[in-house]
Amino acid sequence: MGRKYADCSFCGGSVEERIVDVDYRTKTGLVIVKNVPAGVCGQCGEQYYTAEVAKTIEKLAEAKTPVPETVTVPVRQFSEGIVL
Image (cartoon, rainbow, N blue to C red; front, side, top):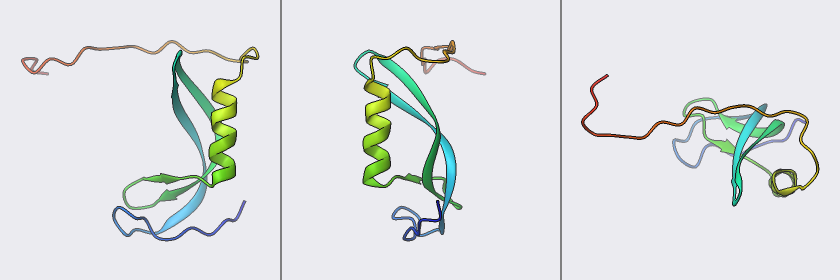
C-alpha cells in the first residue's frame, strides 16, 4: 500500500489510499469483493483503482470457484408516489 493518487477528478478533494469493499455487478448477479486497496476522496467518497486492482476485482467477481461467504440483500421497487 502507500500509492499516491491525484486529486479527485470530480470535486478536487484529496485522495488517500484505504481498504474498501466493492459491489461488482456481473451478468449473473452481484458480487462483493472485500479488502480492496483503493484511492478514496476524503470529500466526496469517489473511489479510484489501479489497473492491476481493477483487473483482479473483475477476475474475482467472474471466478467460478466456490465463494466463502454469501449474504441476502433486500430489494425494493422505486415508486414516485411513496411518502416515507
